[in-house]
Image 1 (cartoon, rainbow, N blue to C red):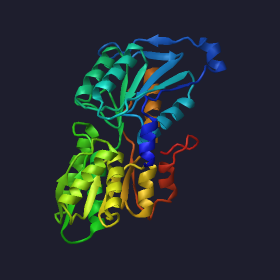
Image 2: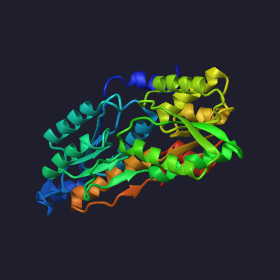
Image 3: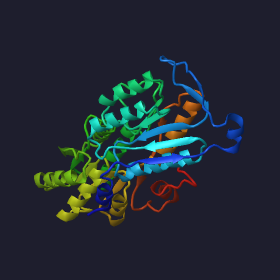
Length: 351
């Protein structure tokens, strides 16, 4: 059993986290910890501004039980711990495909009248209505990792530039394979989500620059490592001369790595992956994974919560933010900058 699968098993129940920081003496004297709420100036009179007093912010990932989202949680928790009068509520469904479950969870937070909503959309179109519902209640929204379709102009997205990073995945695969004709496969994860569709677009645009690479297979992992294992086995059976694979998220990479190891093709079939769970990092070190496109989930959580607090306190809506990526290989994995992203600390949050 991989570390990822252990984590997922341990997270079969929804994870809830509350981080609260009490009033400082200064705030007690100035406002006795009571909220000062001022109607905003948006279309529905919002977002409402709470210049003082306790604030509750809900942060909802696509799913719990993944290293990526756990790092987002740590970043959000870190940001909240550096503020006064902040209560952070973290909750998520157990599968990124549970769109209905996420909708219900978000609606529940709105019913409980949270002051701000930070979330990653499991389905761009379905979750757009939840965002509109929040805005109609004058509750500000920030999307992390994945936005909605349409994306309201007053709802910023804190995320990776998925298209540009996925183009780079094609470059990394071409560099690893070298000159000559090569057959490659692509393992997306959840068609219909913004991140999946952007990575698909970017990778295929990148492949167009390398005509010596022929895409011979494309199958989704459904964001499940066991499905990714089966999918990769099927691809290898149908394409015994396969030269390379790009797996577009953590479960896909873990499943593909396991399939290559079992087939005795680890390192022979070049694998470009996404994210950096412990199993993925181990794969880079062993040579089973050629390179990883590593996002900065800690920064997503940290910066988005900071931005939400600014919005709730002042009414100013933040701009969208590209939270950046690093390209990790066996040669640079011990670089201090790379290590700061792989092992983020609240003492020195990665920028």
